[in-house]
Image (cartoon, rainbow, N blue to C red):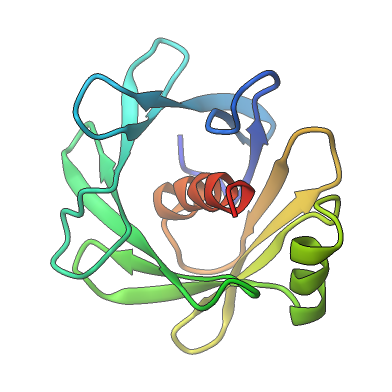
Length: 178
């Protein structure tokens, strides 16, 4: 698990938009669900046997103002985090590693498409470029036009899939609410 450079995130049918299935090279490996057992609502990524593999929490474990922390549940290691940047028109997110260092930016593709998505129709799928601090493309997150959201993630650079895959789920869930 998390050994590939191709993933697909699919919003589950008949969900409220906060449940997704994660495929690695075409095989279902995880799904997300909200954990309402504590005061906060963590997002859990569980395998087919219901073993929690990753946890996304809004209570940051990092020493920077991060919106979300991503934790490997097996090792209790904070893999990194995701922080929203930019305005309401063209979305931008910062990916942060476990050492509190910004390692990449997730940028919505084009301003004109961003405007159309927000003000004309939600049928235009979201597309993001993931770029390193040196502005080199390291991944794509491309949405498909479907009844439920589907994102194809292609990693072409140095980034931990355990960071970028949950980030795609978080971004999808938040974009829907905007």
